[in-house]
Image 1: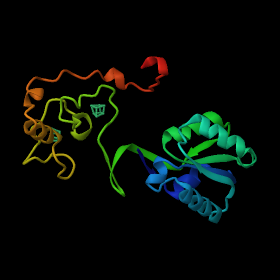
Image 2 (image 1 turned 90 degrees about the vertical axis):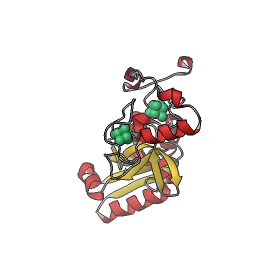
Image 3 (image 1 turned 30 degrees about the vertical axis):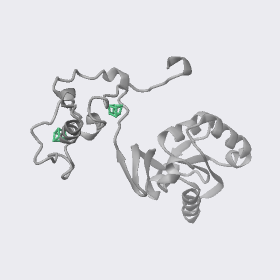
Image 4 (image 1 turned 120 degrees about the vertical axis):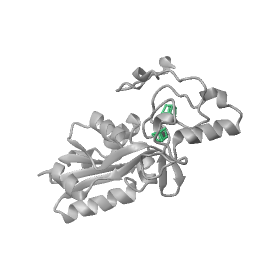
Length: 216
Ligand code: SF4
Ligand code: SF4
């Protein structure tokens, strides 16, 4: 899931400026899971804006705000509420904000900061394990990503900063390369990392990405 964090109300009010009537929309997938942009948070944001003198022309939260057809359908069903707004405040990741921006000509603003692609470890705990590099090498590294989980993203580790399995960066986090070594050793696959890894093809991580059915 995409992990997000709400911006402060002051920051939001600052970019809403003099716009009085606001339409709010959230996402019932990722943003709802972390309580940053589901329907309860959209309602709560609406109340906060009203308390600061704004008018809420309408609000909703739909599944997968990054899905263009979902957004088009919602906006056509709520055309009057959207038309009555001077701007739209989106409680979703940056993909959701930009999908709304594609579909509406109104000014569209982000209520959240988009942090990372995360795994759900516990109910309220998320960890980043993949940074979408476009050339996965987990088959060689025991299922542990050095690009993301090594603080320096190095492909041939560990570096000299490891001490008793801990990384010198990041308040005692475990060294990814020690984890990779131990995992491969337990599987009898240390040969995987005896050779030097070639530099990765980071051209695959060039932004912006796009893909179509025929590209598979
Ligand atoms: S190697 Fe790349 S694709 Fe694979 S987990 Fe790491 S960042 Fe993600
Ligand atoms: S100590 Fe380990 S995790 Fe930290 S930067 Fe060096 S190789 Fe990467």
